[in-house]
Amino acid sequence: MKHPMIRAENVHKSFGQLEVLKGINMTVEQGEVACLLGPSGSGKSTFLRCCNHLETVTAGRLYIDGEIIGYRERGGTLYEISEKDAAKQRQDIGMVFQSFNLFSNRTVMDNIIEAPIHVKKQSPAKAKERAMELLEMVGLAHKADSYPIQLSGGQQQRIAIARAVAMDPKLMLFDEPTSALDPELVGEVLRVMKDLAAQGMTMMVVTHEIGFAREVADTVYFMDGGVVLESGTPSQVLDNPQHERTQSFLSTLL
Image (cartoon, rainbow, N blue to C red; front, side, top):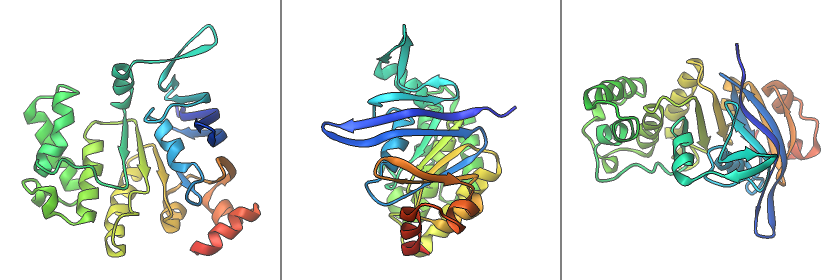
C-alpha cells in the first residue's frame, strides 16, 4: 500500500527576522512526483532543503517516510539530532542541485561509486556493477573513465542524477536541475528524470519546466511569499489556475 513519503505540517523557516516559509502543509505519497512552481524567493528551494535537513525547520513538523527529519520528539518537544544522525537520514534522500557538484579530480565512475562504497559499505565490484547499470540508464556508459571537465553541462547533470540514485534512495529531490543548462541540453536531463518517475521513484522537483510538470507530475504546487497558494493536478493548476497570482506567473512562462 502507498503511504506518505513527505508530510509537512505547518512548516515555518526563518533566517533571522526574515520568514521564508510561513506554514507549508503538503503530502506527497510514495511513488508520486510533486512539482513546485513559483517565482524566485517564494521559498521553494528552502522547503526542498528542509526535506533533508540541509536547512533546519523553525516551527512545524516535516516527516520523511513517517520519520521526523532532523529532530527527535520527546514529551511534545523537538530536539535537533546530531549531524551524524542527520547524515544517516540523508542516505535515503537523493538530492540533485542546480550546479552539478561532481568531484572534479575523479572520474565519472569514481564519482558514482564513492558513497556506496564508503557510506553503504558496498564492495567495489558491486558498486561498479551498479554504476554501469546507472550509466547505461542515463546514456553515458561510454563516459565512465572521463572527468567532469570533459563533459557537457547536461552530461554532468545526468551523472549527478546517477550518483544520487546509486545510493538507492527512497526519495529524490531536484532543485531546478536544468536551470544552469543551455536550452538544447535540458531535454536529455528531463528524459532521465521522466525515466526515474516511470520506475516509481518518489520525486519532488523545483522547476520552471512547465512541460515536464504537465507530463510527469501527479501534483503541482504553486508557491509565493512562503506559502502554497494553489495545488492540484497539472491540468487543474496549469490549465485552469484559480489564484490570480498563479495566473499572472504562468502567463509569463506559457
